[in-house]
Image (cartoon, rainbow, N blue to C red; front, side, top):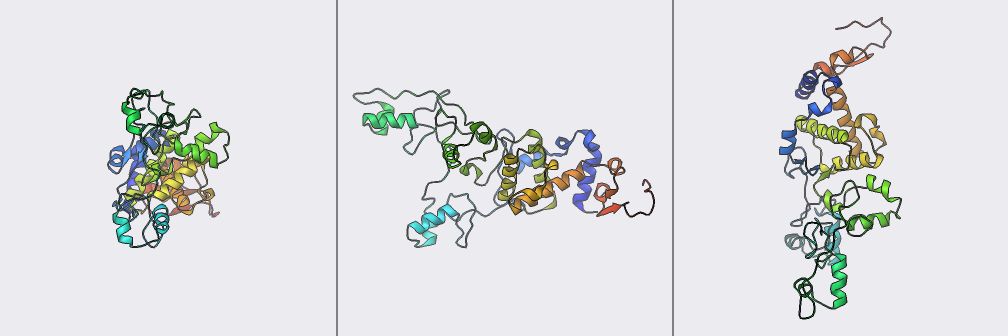
Length: 321
């Protein structure tokens, strides 16, 4: 009996299968929180040095994206490095990020009070404040603090949260999307907004070393968490990018359960691996000897053993163990 089979079989026995409380009873929330799960934000952020979920960061200082080339740089940092004529790579990496990234959201220097939260543009002001500041011909400081002609800036009402289910940024315009999702919606040729907001992935910056589960049905979130837990127990190397791609496929297809999908349909190989692994471990953990008795093929992992036992060979009726 392997350790993971014993744990899965024991968990199934304690929960009594599906009827004993389902997937939620199988998840050890405390251990998941310790490994990077934030229940309030529905975001999982593993430590890059984690032996199971760890990943290599881009060699550029303060960049958390994963490298995809021999230089150890992410695609954005390598493009910026090449645009500067390449040069000394160590010096470039030590200087830190030198190009625009989908970074964490910043609020406007003026519109940042309750009920007035608006995301900032490059100037540090929201679109409305930046436009008014430019029209007046003021510097940012003069606009914020006031000058001899105009008083201190007055904050604008917030547009609320971004309408995309997977996003927790603030909307930038009346259309109800944050800046990154406004650009993505335009690149997607502005499909019907209501459906697009349900299936759109998080902004790119929110995926740097993170897995955003926000926007998935609660039952699917619990199933994915169980998959992470099973991977940790088995020591199965599972980088966040693979999990994130699987989660994005679940979101895009609006799956209601990992158990109801065909992982082979996922477009990415690593996503298929994680989804198939999660579904397999869920089926074992949610089973029990009583449930297996009704099948023509028994999964012996339910009893803590390896393999399967088939009764379809035509050798007579099966007997209960």
